[in-house]
Image (cartoon, rainbow, N blue to C red; front, side, top):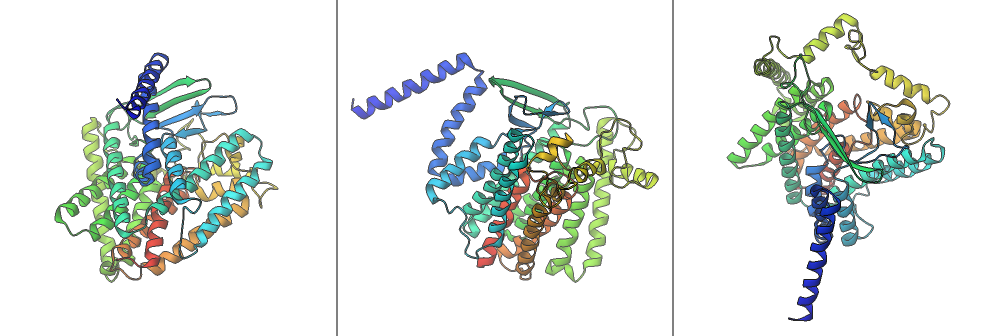
Length: 487
C-alpha cells in the first residue's frame, strides 16, 4: 500500500472513532447533525451555489419550529418560549457564505447598475451597529444584530448566485418545490396536536422545536391551520408559492409542467385559506388585483376579470371550509374570516375584533404598537436601539415590519426601509411595461407578490424574519437580470 492509502485509512479510522465516541456521549441525532455539518462544509466550499438551493428549502422552516437556543439568563422568555433562537438553516448559511467568499472574494454582489439598494442595505447594517451603543441588553441586541446581518447576507448570496435566466428559472423551480413541501406539511399537521420539545446538548445550548397542530385534531371552531410555521407565516409563504407558480406557468411551454403548476397554485390557495389569516387573504387579493391590472391580456378587461377572480375566490373559500367542517365532525362551517368580519362590524374594531369578546386573548396590535410609540418618547430620530423594542415590551415581535424599523431605528431606519421599497417599486414598474421575455413576465409576477408581502408586512412580523429576505433575494435577482435585458 502507498503512503496515500495509509493516510486515507488513518483518516477514516479517526473519523469512525470520533463518531463512536460521540455516540456514547450524545444522542444519535446530534451525531448525525455533526456529520452533516462536516459534509456541508466540504460541499459548499466546492459548490457554494448548492447551499443556495438548500437554503431555499430550509429558510421557510420557522425558527420557532426547529431551532438552536442559548438558555442563559440574558435570553429572556415570552410565553414560556425563548425569544432569541438560531434557525435551523444557520449552519448551512454560514458554510454557504464561506464558500462564496472563497470563490468570489469580497464582491459577492456585483451589480452593473450600481444599485441604490446596495447602499441602503449597507446603511441599515451600519446604523444598526451604531444603535448598539445605547442598548439596555447588549447580549440580546447583539443577537438581534446577528439576525439582521445574516438576513442581509442571505439576500446577497441569492442575488450573487443568480447570474443567468436559466439559473433564475432553476431557483424559481426550487422555490416551487420548497413551498410544495411546506404546503403538504401544513395539511399533515392539521391532523395532529401541537407538541414542543427541547434538548440541551451543551451547557446553556439546546436544540428544540415544535409543530403547530390544529384544525382537524382539536375540538372547537374555528382554528387556524399551520405548517412548519405559524399561520401568518404560512399564509405569506403560500402567497410567494402562488406568485412564483403563476410566473412559471406563463413562461413554461410544456403541458405537463403547466398542469403541475396549476395544481401547485390551487394547493397554495387551499393552504392559504386554511390559515384563516386576514392579512394573508387580503394580501392575496391585492396580489391578484395588481396582476390583473398590469397584465397585458387582462388589463383591458380589468373589471370583468376582477369580478370573476373575487367570485371564484369566495366560492373556493366557502366550499373548502365546509369540507373542513365535515372532516372535523363539526356542525358549523369553519369560517374564521367571516366570524371576525362580523365581530368587526359589531365592535367597530377592525384590527383586533376578537379581543373585546374573549378574555385573556393577550395584547392586540394596537396595544403592541402603543407600547412601541410610548417607548419612542424623546427617541424619535434614532429609535430605542436594535432589538430593544422586544426588550422593553416583552412581545415576540412588533406585528409590523415598518413599525419594527421605526421602533428600533427611529425615523432614520424607517426612512431607509421606505427608500428601499420606493426604489424597488420604481425600477419594477419600468421593467413590467414590456411582457415578452421570460424575465419580464416573471418580473410582473414577482412585483405582484411584492405587493402582497409589503401589505402583510404592515400587520405582521418584523425585520428579523428570514422569509422576507429570502423573497428579497428573489426580488432583486429578478430586477438585476431584468435591468440587463432577459431572453
